[in-house]
Image (cartoon, rainbow, N blue to C red; front, side):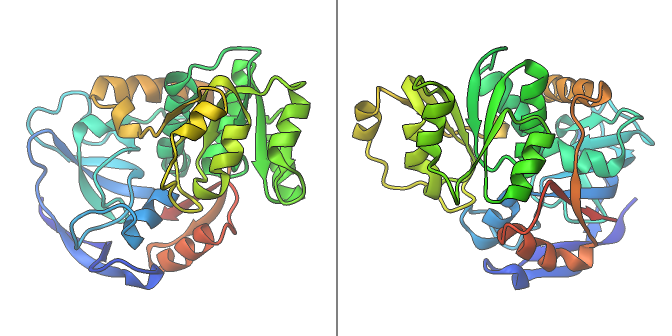
Length: 327
């Protein structure tokens, strides 16, 4: 069934104004694809990176990587889902900002009945990101302590809850008393307001000088050296985002001088490359949601027509929790 739907496209890189609401054609799904009538779409900082051109993709293109909805059609070779299934995805090709779209079937998982479309759209990319960070990049164990920057953000609030479920002491950084309270409410062991406190000094105090085996940093340029200063010798710096800009011109000698540190720059795609690995990560996430150990806080909802406003709020750090487009 070929149809016309509303979708966001960009013809050039730039500010929120480059996003155009237009009409696109959704063709029949190809082999190993599914057509999804979307009910909700998740917004993430990575969407801004693609809009501005920090991350390159051939123009013109859509935006967005995660969504949830109902399967309208399946292409040949698709066996794990069928027409009418409630589904979600969190690591697709660009183009989630749309009423309907085709998605590679190996990126799509069935959605349990007790998770709403909005929850799924808010959870998938951020939840799967948290899964690979805390369970694969460095497998946290009960009793360990870690630092997670931007603990009141979409990924941060899930990380706080997941850490609590694991018995891990998560120290979160925040920029206000309100965000500190929110992170604590979601399971952070301690919080550091980086506008008022020295993060590395406070980490040293909280750990009796031992510092940390791993730091999770989605902020980037502004927190790079601070994060390194929070690590134990041979500790692991996980730099997974660039909210303040990318880390550039890294002098590897700094890693030696600060204790033979390790650094990784992971991406979700490398950790869920197959349908089976995607399903396994989603199952772990959905299990914690089903046991009410993780809940998603949707702080903002926008329509497709309000997407520029949504990007402005996200870039201006005026959001808490997750942001979704409702369709």
